Length: 117
Length: 109
Image (cartoon, rainbow over all chains, first blue to last red; front, side, top):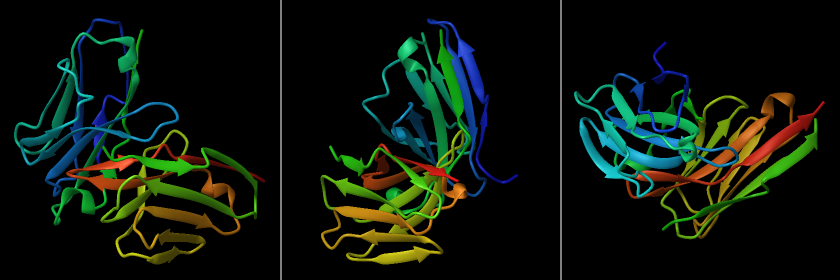
């Protein structure tokens, strides 16, 4: 399968614990995005990488959130000291290099559903 | 910041009926994209519109981009049960896409 993959698909954690999610983009795509989606809403942008450089972070991304893409391939999103409000679907997407990042289609992974109890 | 609004939030149609969802942006867009998310699935790209007044068709789906490039619509002719899902429009804002809240389509067979 050459699509975007995410791991784990589901995560249940207790409030206060740290969690880490992984995203493997389509291999030839150098742009990678993280989104958060809650019920009844569209995906909300969290952060964007071009290769290994994190070029943009949303104001939604509090200090408890950190994302990395160390070698410009896979990416991780870590949430420290989880809160119940962090419960959501975390989606990763990738896209190839085109003129501007937002002018090209994005390929989404299946997401990681986080439940904080 | 940019806002993208979609209406209706939800539509339940009889199989064979038509369906339309509308998307409005608070700012002029350089392009607009449409995605479909099946229940339990992830968003899948459908199409991108770039030109003012552009109309594109994909089988029973017709996409339009407004003359002012601030609104768009998706029309499905003769819906089928396979059309069930949430349809999102998304507009560019810097490096990112801003998604609308989506229109949920349910089809009664």
